[in-house]
Each structure stands twice: as structure tokens, then as C-alpha cells.
Image (tube, rainbow, N blue to C red; front, side, top):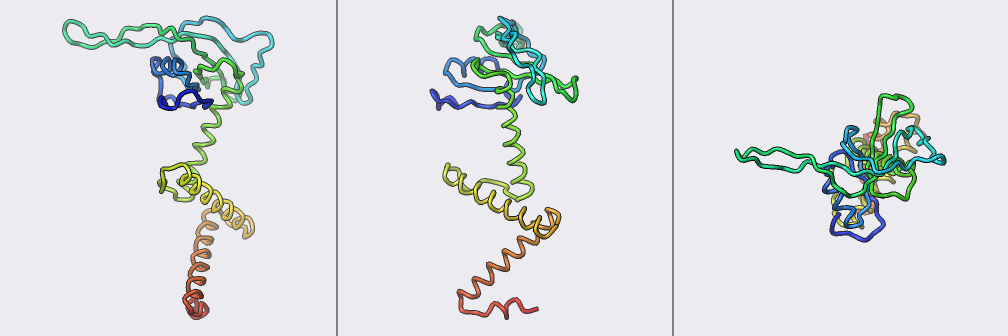
Length: 216
């Protein structure tokens, strides 16, 4: 990430990243991000970004807070005995904290931190939702289409693999609906029919008779 600066990408980060120093470093390098935050993050509110024109309806979420803040960080301190403990310090890099709650379950709160102050709160939360769409997609191709790893690590190779996987998924879905089958049954039968079709073509290209080969 840090090697690719001065671009218009927005990096979407899960709760695995909670380092205030890292977020501050992103801001200093003009790397925009949207991160899911812990709901109990300690912060100092500088100003509220909510006004009379703010739309608090974020789709499935309701906006509770949209503020410009400073976050606290834990600075490691070693005492005279050599024991390590952490002292809270504020990091004076302005960040944006968005607090929301679910419309279906008001007990379910979600917090987001970003260094983008131009987009609306809904646009910020929608960006994070896109991340989950990607997660669902990769879970689908891994679990349902058995794509366990990428066979290429360059951009073109990854694109080719993903396009081929999507084409295969669409063909299976068409086969499923055309034959009124469950997804797993359709995938198994589709695989068998494609295999037999390939074998038939290989036999023909080799000068053989596919009718003899597939005779039962």
C-alpha cells in the first residue's frame, strides 16, 4: 500500500487494522482508507459533521455520529524493572469517525474510521459494504467452484482466471434452471457432460469413433 501513493484508490480495511499510528501514516502519505473500527475506540471529538441537511438514513443502517476526531494510541513504555506497559497518547491527525446502528437490531452498532471528509456518510458505509460483496464472491468461487488458489499472480492472469470462473458459474446456473436441478446436482452433471464432450472431441480429432468409446 505505502509503495503506491498519490492515487485515487480507497483502501477498505477490516477490524484487523486498529493501529492509530498506521492510520496517521496513511493520511500523511495521502492514502485514503475506510476501516471498520471497534465500537469502544477512545477518541477526542473535534467537531460534529452532522447538520440540519444530513441524511441519517444509510439504507440498512442509521447514522448516530459523524465527527472529526483525534484517536488515542498506546505508546509502549518500559519501566525501571524492564516491564513493558502502555501509556495512552492522543495522535493529532484528524480522522473521521462514523457510528451507526442496524435498523433491524438497534443493539448492533458499527463504527467506521476514514480520512475522507468529502464523501457522505452513506457513501462511506456503502464502500465498506462493497468489501463484503467481494468476500461473498470469493467464498462462492472457493466453496462452490473449488477455486482453492490463484494459478497466476500477475494482473492479466488473475483477470483471465476470474472471467473463466464467472463464465463457468453462469453456465452452471443456466444448466441448473434449464433442468430444474439443485445447484450441487447441476454442478456435478454439468462437469460430467463437459468432460464427456471434451473426450468425444479428442477421440474425433484422433481419428476414432466416439460412439464406440461411449458405448455402454
